[in-house]
Amino acid sequence: MNKCLEERSRASSTQRTEDGLLVSLAATSGTTLAAGDDLWHVPGLEEFFPEPFLFEGTPFEMNRLILVRLVAVVILALIFGLYARRAKLVPGRAQATVEFGLDFVRKQIGHEIIGEDKADRYMPMLATIFFGVLFMNLTGVIPGLQIAATSVIGMPLVYAVVAYLGFIVAGIRAQGAGHFFKNQLMPPGMPKILYILMIPIEFLSTFIIRPLTLTIRLLANMVAGHMILVLCFVGTNFLYLGMGGASGIALGSLTLIAGMVFVAFEVFIASLQAYIFALLSAVYISLSIEEH
Image (tube, rainbow, N blue to C red; front, side):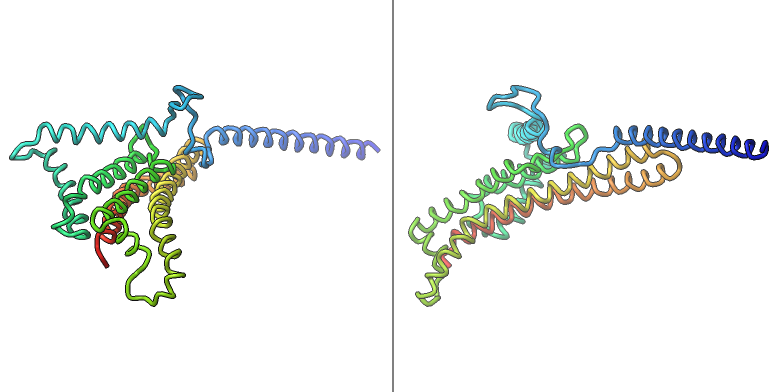
C-alpha cells in the first residue's frame, strides 16, 4: 500500500515538473516570437503609400514619396543649372560627366533612332525624359531616401504623357494633322475593306497601348526592385537580431550579401529603364514624322 502511494506521489511530481517545463518553454517561445514580430516586417503595398507629415488633409499634403521626388528634382536642377552657368571650353570632370550623358542621349538615342538631321529639335524632350527617369529611379538605392520616386504610378504616367504628346505633336508638325492620323490609322498598301478592322486596331495600339506600356513597364520594374531590397534587408535585420545564434548570423549574412548584389542590380535596372523609356519615345517620334 505504501509502495503504491509512493509511486503515485512520484508520478504526480514528475507530471508537475513536466507541466512546468512545458509552460516555461511556451512562455520562452512566446517571448521569442514577440521579439521577432517587432523585428520582422512583411513588405507590402503600404511601402508605397507612406503617411503624410506636412499639410495633411490639403491638396498640398506631403509624404515621404513626394519629398523623395522633390529631392530628385532639386538635385537634377542643381546639376544642370551649375553646368549651364559654369561651362568652360576645356571641361573639368563634373562638366565632362554631364556632357558625356548629354552626348549619350543625342548620339545613342536621338541620332541612332530619329537621324542626325532631325534629332536635335527633339533633344530637350529626350534628355528630360532620360535624366528625369534616371534620377527618379536611383532614389531607390540612396540611403535615407530608399524608395524609387517612380514606384507609384503618378510619376511614370507623367513621363508617359510627355512622350505621348511629344510624338503626336511631332507627327502633326511634320505631316499635318490629316496626313499624320491617316498614316497612323490606315497603313498604306492594304485592301480598303480591311481598314474596317485596321483602324480600331491601330488606334488602340498607337494611342492607347503605347502610353500604358510605357507606364506599366517602368512602374513594375521599380516596384519589384524595391520589394526585393526591402525583403533582403529586413530579413537580414530579423535573422541577426531576432533569430540570433550561429544559424541566424549565417543566414543573415547570406541575405545581406544578396541585398548588396541586388542594390548593384537595381542601379543597372534604373539606368536601363531610363534608357528604354527615352529610346521608345524616340522610336515613337521617328514613326510619327515619317510618311510611311
